[in-house]
Image 1 (cartoon, rainbow, N blue to C red):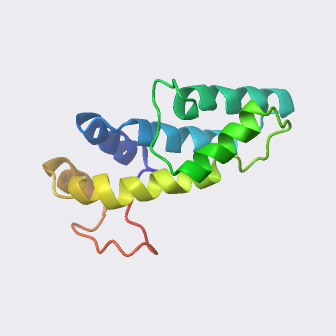
Image 2 (image 1 turned 120 degrees about the vertical axis):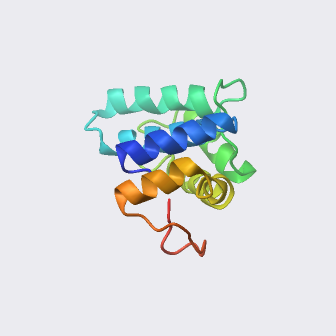
Length: 136
């Protein structure tokens, strides 16, 4: 659903209403970083921008990730271990995705917005949140 523009937009609006839209913003930023053809310098710049927005202690859109993941990212970015690995944010993205899936999305599927979108995108009206075939 979040790979679809309409689905992502509707879910983002729902997350805004729950004051947790930083999660989908981060998830999408990682997707864009992964698909960019940025060279080493541009890639490093994007990694640092994302760090400032989502990971750093004073970041305006801090995401809720586990301590070990945050520490690993901080050490890589602040320790200036360039070039940064392509998967620098993968673990954090997976964590954020699971939070959205189990917490926010499980509430979103009960909204009229989701029901309408589900019809349009031919999505199921309900889900079993078992982790393997993620609905989100």
